[in-house]
Length: 410
Ligand SMILES: [Zn+2]
Image 1: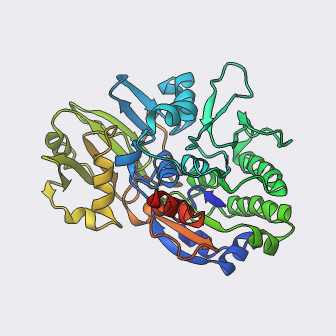
Image 2: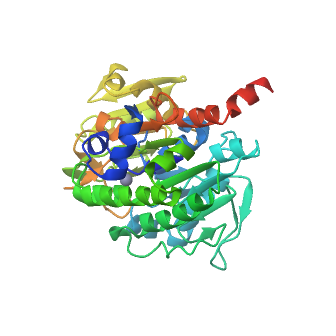
């Protein structure tokens, strides 16, 4: 079972006294691991699902310019940003096109890999879900999508009738995670999967509002959702007899003190949270235009295939070494064909406002290369050593099921 608590920082998990999480920590192996860049949910969940960075999976940011279709794609930086980009298109991009069109066909998801080996995968609410099974929507007019065999997505796609409550209303009080718990309980009761990906997004929502070290209530609700799975198995020990577990988050969070709208002459800027992309024909000039901008931690671009990192007029790859896997993560992000020509990682404390001018000043945000945005808790139970990066989860799971070995032999 893969449990992803969106936006959970290592420090919050390490200090928790909630019972289900403490039980897993007591029985597993734990380390801090590194996310991808930009450390934003659609990018990170694609990395978790495919075991690859954005150069392979193709998802560049929460908001980006689709060169082929000559239009913006907005996955929901905020509801207002979604509305500014066109609500119907935004919802379709987030739910359908991300998986059907934007996620590279060259990248293989964990669901595809395991189901090709006749294993049953299940996913609840995770936005990167591409699989081999066609699912019709519960609402007329929405398109059919390809997901894992057992697939539950915010009440919109439900492969099985579980009796779970509606997932859409009242997100701030945790209705999404309550829905996940109800579906998860149903699945565990039937032992209806080989792999279950159990995604809990509500924590990130609370942490954006309250800051990265204050969302204790949301963490307690996530714990309750996990405890519901234990109960469905007959108790925590019985649960671990049946399932190995990976528990992690997709990215961290840091405090936001100031927000800015990033405007650069000659560039189309897509910005949200703590990362921005500049699309334009002269990347060096665009990066140089940011030299006096205090919100820019580092700007980077490719020149003759090589990464150039720049801050305040200085060009030095050492600027990337200030951050965990900084050079490798920036390189992979720049080599994504959907990325802008210049990528910007925000300076500590800064956020870039989204299309609608929304930001999280006084709360938390993420997206940059900075350690606290990039670091995630990584706990494994019954799976050996936890991976050092979120891109290592897929191979850990394939090894567990013996799939990687079989494929290499083939
Ligand atoms: Zn977030």
